[in-house]
Amino acid sequence: MCKKLIAFLVFSFIIINFSIFSNNVTGKQTENNPNSSTSEVRSSDDSTILNNKKTHIQNFLKHNSTRITLTAEEVLNVHQQSVLDKILKPNQTTLSLNNVVLTFASTKHLVAAASTTASNLEGTVTYNNTTPTIAQLNSLLKSTNTAIILTSEESRNPNHQSVLNKVLNPGQNLSSEMVNISFNSSTSELKIAVASSCCTITGSEVVFNQISVTQDLSTFTKTPTDQAITVTQAETTNPTQATVNKFLQTPDTLTINTDVTITFNANERKATLAVVANSTKAQGSVVFTNVTVEKQDLSTFTKTPTDQAITVTQAESTTQTQDTLNKFLKTANKLTINTDVTITFNANERKATLAVVANSTKVQGSVVFTNVTVEKQDLSTFTKPTTETITVTQAEVTSKDQNALNKFLKQAGSLTVNTDATIEFDTTNKKATITATPNSTKAQGSVVFTNVTVEKPALNTTLTVKELGQINARTQAAVKAAMLSKNTNLQNVDQNRFTITLDTDASKSNAKVTHPDFAGEVEVSFSVQLKLESILTSTQRDLGKLPERSVDAVRKALLTKKIISSLTPEQQQHLKIELIENKNEADISSSDFSGTIRITFSVQSYTGLIFFVVTVLSLIIIMFVITIKRIKEVK
Image 1 (cartoon, rainbow, N blue to C red):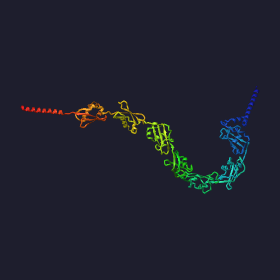
Image 2 (cartoon, rainbow, N blue to C red; image 1 turned 45 degrees about the vertical axis):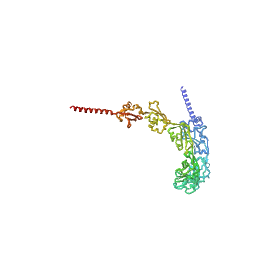
Image 3 (cartoon, rainbow, N blue to C red; image 1 turned 180 degrees about the vertical axis):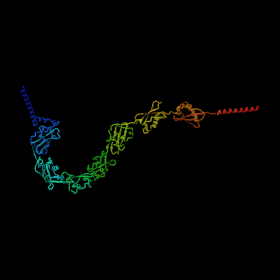
Image 4 (cartoon, one colour; image 1 turned 135 degrees about the vertical axis):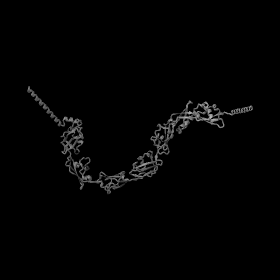
């Protein structure tokens, strides 16, 4: 039994180890075989590069034993799509030039390495079976008798990319590190040879013998650069050889447009001389900082004679454009509106004044044209649609002022009342006629608006004093007179158009006032001043006998009358009494009542009483005398 158990354990151990060995072998084959199914699965999974696990670049590329053939151009510029396409597995699109760095090693092998910017890639693959096409140096360069222009700096330091670029054929991309460049100034020879470290090109040294060395432009130009130089306006526009010579130490040592160009900045008084790209003589640029441009007189640009007929539109007379200016110039666009010149129109005098802008770099002076016609625009171009509802105040209907005109204009103030246009209102038919004045310089014609509403002000805002006080009669005329007296701001209103309506109840002291130029009505109140004759009737005007002919006697007699005694003390005091000379009559008046009445009276006579008294006294005296005599006789 023990022997069987031992045999079983040994057999199991052998089987387990065999399985482990088999798996290890299979795993290694899968890892090393780029054509294995596992590798195919990896390469077909486009998300591999996107996940966090780094993937070896070989999973996307052909096996390193693959034969790769490179063209001469690919050898010189190995990092390009055509080279990557040669090593990518079939149908592999995930890997791009951004993920890989392609180099051509000095061992003449193609090397593909994961880019440092591809965070999910790693590794390098070297293709040992690379067949490169090595370019010949002379095939990359221009013909040796090509004229080559070197700067003075390049002649001193020729081993530079800028020098190599001058001798390379168009489209060639060769680095200055691949070659050795030398220049022999005594023989004017430029030599190009393959660098010993370069493995991508081959061939013998190439010698260029048509070499020119340019000097710095400053060696040709005057010094210092702030010296005064004067040029004409024409020279700033079209520089000539004579213009260039003004800046050169020696005339004609450089040629305009062949060796050098000139750009002027008249505002800053600068002139910049710049070398033409293909100049064989000079290089660089020089700026002169004290350059004066002689301005030409404006008349050299404008038409002649100045009294020739020129017509402009109304819009041009208001806002001048380049087209407006061109009408006055000999050659259109020679001057620029508002930059070189402005225009002022005087339509009444048919004049246009062209004046130079202070900072103009071209011209100076001014010119006056004396036969300029400004075309008037039709009035309708200024006004609103004629059917539009326009509301004006009654005051505007009367004044016809600028505010009234503005209500009919598209733009307020574009026309001036009475200068450019007048207004006539037909309030009955809700119309207003706008007519251009004959002397208007802006508009012509007329326009009729057919929907004009007059906005009436409220009457109660003008008729503010509504308590009229006493009037002398309950009549419309008396109410109106009192109303106008109390409300002085009604003096400018058409007084004949007021309507006064008295209350139908004659015992009431009020009336309603309306006016067609105002909205609403106003109720006024008043008190009627009674006539004196109404309180002292004709039957009460005889005062009878008075003790004396005096004002006081008359007043006392009046107060005995019941109607007079019922007056207030103030009204009694206001009674005025005037005696009629040589008559027993008096005129009575009062500030509280209207009218004057005349009263009559008689003065009581004392003649009979006096006669009686005298007679009685006489008899008494006589009787007294007789009595005395008898007494004496008795004695």
